Length: 113
Length: 113
Image 1 (cartoon, rainbow over the protein chains, first blue to last red):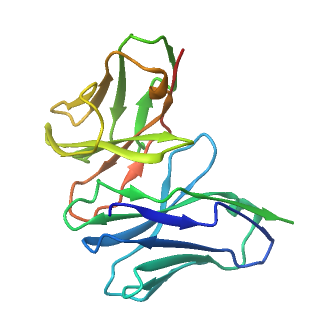
Image 2: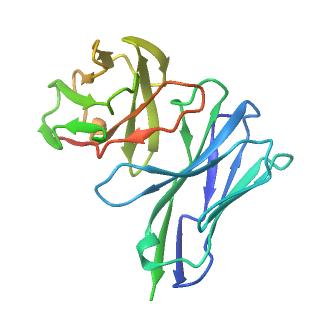
């Protein structure tokens, strides 16, 4: 019940395309859903996060869509750029345990010219 | 403001040895959490320390332990190393609130031969 399932495992899009990464969870105690971006040789960096009382959140070119009833959330990257090529992780944690994140398995995104 | 600093960056050990990894959080951050990242299991939560006390713990054997000092610096120890302990060990710091942003270091890459 602690799992967060992420798909696809890898994704190739052209510059300007809109890659979409999907995640699903089972634990209804989860109430905070961040997305992290990781470049090779670096630790993950927080991109954007959402709580279940909001259906969509946008920060710059990154948008999270959240469907509480389906227990699914997704990341959209608008106008993707080669510099967005990285591995993206969705995550979730229950209330009051910000540090105890359950991560998805990651999506390796490549943005081509 | 300096980021999260982890030392050493790389480490090679042999089976049966023990190892200590160090993490210096961002100044003012009181929470330090540790994660293990492997290609097979992804990112997994080890434990969190807040004000020198372990506040949360993941599902790892007792060979994995940690501590936090009064200046919030943290160390992680792994005793009796196994080949499967080869991984990138990431430290993250935060202020310690219920939905605080986690800031990750670049990690210590541990190889067990």
